[in-house]
Image 1: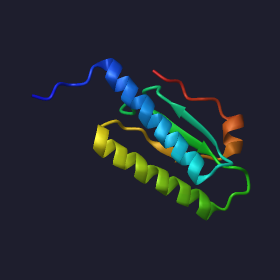
Image 2 (image 1 turned 90 degrees about the vertical axis):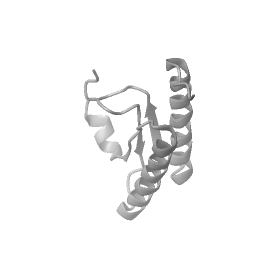
Image 3 (image 1 turned 120 degrees about the horizontal axis):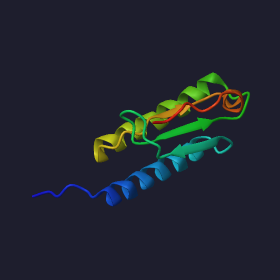
Image 4 (image 1 turned 90 degrees about the horizontal axis):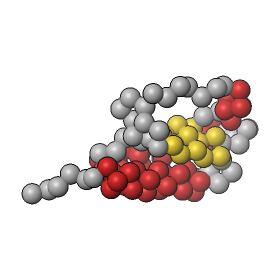
Length: 102
């Protein structure tokens, strides 16, 4: 019989997954600022946001986002943890307040 993971084990797995995705994002774009959060919102278990340097080509941003989202989907299939990833405009990060989290 398979025993469900304890909340502590689930949190350890989530932390490892967030670390893996953040390191992968830095591998894809070393100049980017990467933020990983374990704050849960609706059906998310956490999130990873990537802020590439200004002037990065749109095609390069899309390549980074597609690769990161594909890896997140693979990890979801393996672990059941849903961690969406996004590549965002760095200028929006400085001007927009963070959404409230429940």
